[in-house]
Structure formats: C-alpha cells, structure tokens
Amino acid sequence: MENSIRLKTRSNSAFRLIYHLVLVTKFRRKSLTGEILTRMKSIIGELLFKWECELIEFGGESDHVHLLIETHPSVDLSKLVNNIKTVTSRKLRSEFSQHLKKFYWAEKPLFWSGSYALISVGAQAPLDKLIEYVQNQEKPE
Image 1 (tube, one colour):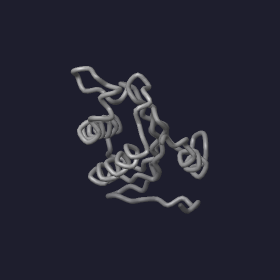
Image 2: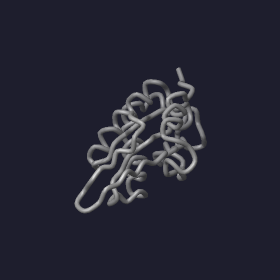
Image 3: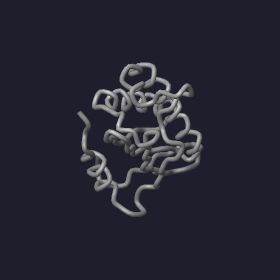
Image 4: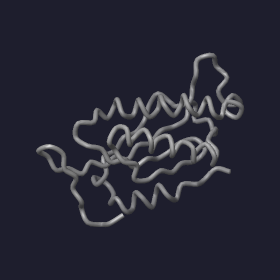
C-alpha cells in the first residue's frame, strides 16, 4: 500500500474513509482455525465488493478478527457491520458445522458476540502501523 493519501471520488465528493473493525466470537470461544479464517476473509471480501467497499487487510486469532476496511460516505456502518456478522455467521456455521458445534451447541445459531469495535483509522495510529498489527496476529493452527 502506498503511503500517500489517495482520495476516491463519487458524485460531488472526495474521500478516504478507512475503519478498523474488531469482531469477537460469542463467549470469546477459541473456535476459529486457520481454515476458517481463510474462508472468512474470502466471504468478507466478496461481501464488501457488493457494498462497493474494499478489504484492505484481514487477520485474526482463535477468538477474534481484525478488518481494515475502506468505505464510501453513503455506507451505513452499523448495517455494514451487521451484514458482515450475519453473512459470515450463516456461511461458516453451515460450512464448518462439525467443528463449530463443539463450541456453540445452543438451538439459536450463535457465532459472534453482540458487540464490536469500529475505529476510524488515522486518529491513533498510521495506517501502515495498523496493517502491520493486523498482519502480525497470532494465527491459530
């Protein structure tokens, strides 16, 4: 990624909106594997493309994930996050049901915690440092 600020344009605006999203598994269960994280990255990339957004970086550990996403001004961030959580939960619980049922056995499908962290990038750390931080997450086996 280049260090210079590159603005995107749309209609009558120029912008660069980047967010650091952290999602935590329900009950902080250590249910994420390397294979699940790889599939999750693919699902999220496809989903963000439909929202006309971009996945800049993705990383995670066994109980949480970090996403750096670039959006446009008309995105409703709470709806985007809800959509990411809903779609990944549904697809991963379907595709990895045997593994995940060891961690989530309730009748109601569970996967993500109800809360999340969404931080605008640039206020506390340069983007390059955040990318490095996300890339250096401890990878589960």
